[in-house]
Image 1 (cartoon, rainbow, N blue to C red):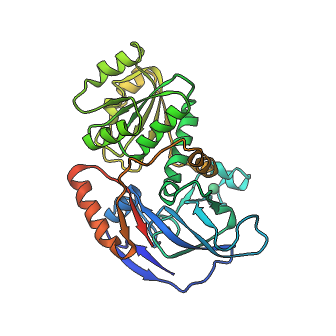
Image 2: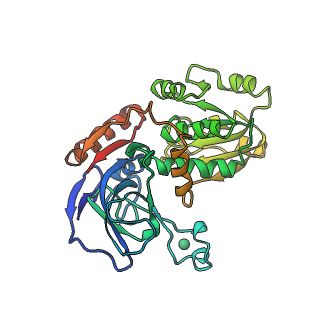
Image 3: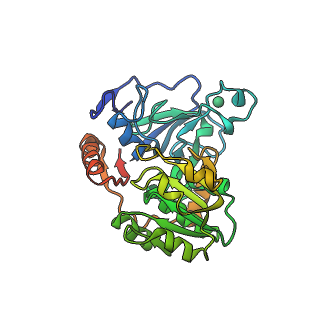
Length: 337
Ligand SMILES: [Zn+2]
């Protein structure tokens, strides 16, 4: 078993282990593709603290070993591997409420991730992929699951306007899902490439850095302003800017992994009595996300996802790091393993 780790900021190394299944693991997966995500880049930069584990939160592969008699999970089946594990130690876990685990563990951070050639895990952490879901689509299941959690927390209803900021892959996927649920996303980004991608993805209200956002949001919402807002912290848009767009008593979701722009004054939020909620993951929504992909609720066909080989991973991290420092933009990379 081999894979990539970052033990010091801005360095990445390949390490090998003896290839054994853990005691509590019932299946072993040969990983075929993984995704380099923003969280991986931030781990590489040293901005997210990471255990001595392989990087990579999103991976798919083929079952190579499993105990007999697990329903449908046979050797050779293509699967998505869940990036989350409950801690089994907190109050909620001990009371059987694993979905409310207060110390949720993430692949690539707390335990070995999927920028590796093999992984072993419990059978309830792998999900069979239907033939209609492509490998590329499957690697974004985590984004879709997170978007589903956000939609659920916002209680999105038919006809609702939802302001989505951040301009990244999550913001795009979330906006597509908001349309799928018959509501209306208003997508805000200061990046030309991201607003173009959003328009190509079928999102109608796309505001860029040249638009007067307060005026436009007021016009679109008939003067009510935004009652439901998602603030993805992974962009140059500040939280303070968001609170100029919200209505009285609006619901504002904070999400994202990059927090350098999150510092802000609560004055506007308090004056408008905003309801601020935080969403960190899509734990529990993996099966629903795969089902949405099978139903073509989200299309990634306009995403120009770069592809690299396993051996090129260190070079690709350096390239992504340079681009991020220069432009503040990030696009996931598919790694063929
Ligand atoms: Zn727990």
